[in-house]
Length: 302
Image (cartoon, rainbow, N blue to C red; front, side, top):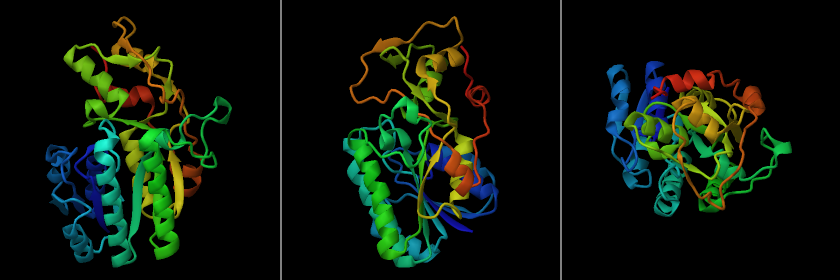
């Protein structure tokens, strides 16, 4: 299968690319390298499969020409609203690249679009009694990132309705794993602090909790979404919320010095856990990596 991965040199994109190449797919990576790195693709390139890398902006005319030339069956867009970077600096480029992907899919025909969005940003604060969060939960976007995430989901639905562009949108839990930038997630930030013997910061009292999903599990959901879950927003998470302060103890050990506390942001979500029920039904997917196993891959003790 011909597959195009926008943001393929980033954390999630490079892991997906590696999996796709290993399974014998012809993969075109498109990345402007704003956040990604060619070094992230070293393992994928070492596999010796069909992989080409294009340093392009998905909003450019060259991208449109590439899609028409390669006619991929699926375009993954994993470069939307990258975590750890100010959305004020990345929002406009993200929306421009989304329109580039959707227009290329419309013009080419028969191309499915798969995107990954932050579930925390999309759902916002949800009452404890309504967690783990199911897809029928109303969206309550958090800040500009959340509003743009909702716009992405609504644009996908509009292009499906008006132009027959098929899509699946994955509302993804907090990911962690190798190659993640320290600013890309709390787990990566803690791992970096442990590796550099520095003291990380923790927001408020650290009781806020997140659904932590190992990158390999997320990649498996993305692969399945290529042929399943058409027209749906699907939660991809474990259904378990882990407090940030408990995560630090798991990674650094019970005797490690506690992180420096900083004031909690007013818009910070207190709790998020995602129900994987729809993913089981429509993607035939379920998480399998225990948190302790996933953390062990990151060298999680001082």
